[in-house]
Image (cartoon, rainbow, N blue to C red):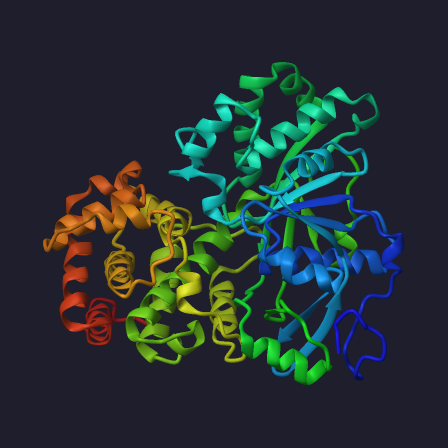
Length: 491
């Protein structure tokens, strides 16, 4: 039976309560992948259920048509499977349409310019922002093309700039617009503003001036573990709901959305459906990046090197679990503040418990995707702070050594998914010290002060050599024993 037939669902399966024909798309969302569909789209679905019918979503894919191709025959309905002690199913109806930007660039631009569009948001992953060392890289080939001409935009910055130029020129569409980053990057709203402003300065200074009072750029902190969709999930959906779904999505029960309250136009009442508006998003961004996201990369790196497929499998290994807990307690907690009202130690244990969810098949290689970009946000800032304070951070030394070996082995196994793949491939050396320096440089570590600390890099190299020679299990066990001897109060 098709998912389109949402009537007569089996008992216990939720569906939307609103008439989708009355819903308009007040939100344009770039990056219509699994995370958005398990997170922001669910909040919008809840809002629509309250009668706020102007907050439907039109999704935009900057690259592939695969999501549109899968969902269009289903009228963009899809199944959310929440994987707790039991699996709960829900049909989400908040996405009204999906555009593929390379195939319909003018439609995307027109939509941004449209009066009814009040919010543009994004989940395009770290690499989608064309960053180097946490800043927009205007030497990126796509941005170089856009600086030369906006006739054929390629990046989110280009499409936003084109949409704003058109919006500013149309007297009937001069309504204020908020643009919100929903990715795991620090100060994402400021990055969007920097990229768009540079293009407007180049191509339409008058629009840039108009945007100062008509466009707001904000950040948000989003949190929900969302695995990749596979045939096992499709089969479960078919068996449990009686519906075929080309691209269902699964997620953990936990969900969190902290939003910077800098809307310049109309603001969706996401606070009525579980989101939280705050004046300063930075402490929440940093907490998630430097604890949860950092730990996820630690666990997935060690898990892959241990031969595990999923993160929760890696944490069944006592040495991996102990390492992650102590890394967070001893090398992160002293150097990464948490927001007022949060307890760092409690947050660490909550993170660990969520990753141990055996019903949540989050693949190590999925977490390891784009890791050269991720560790710039997740590891490097904390390392920099600690090294500047002359603090001892052996767990991060081990992490970086393990990451270097992960990159090397993933290359050998032809499974590395990273925007710097070609550069990693070009590193041909048997000297581990040179490999460490080369890989870290590719990940832009040379823009951080810790890269200039020979003793720190020597320790990284030593761990990489030992892991490569002896495997991660024995190396990790010996490392933990050594740390226990050094720290009598090790818990």
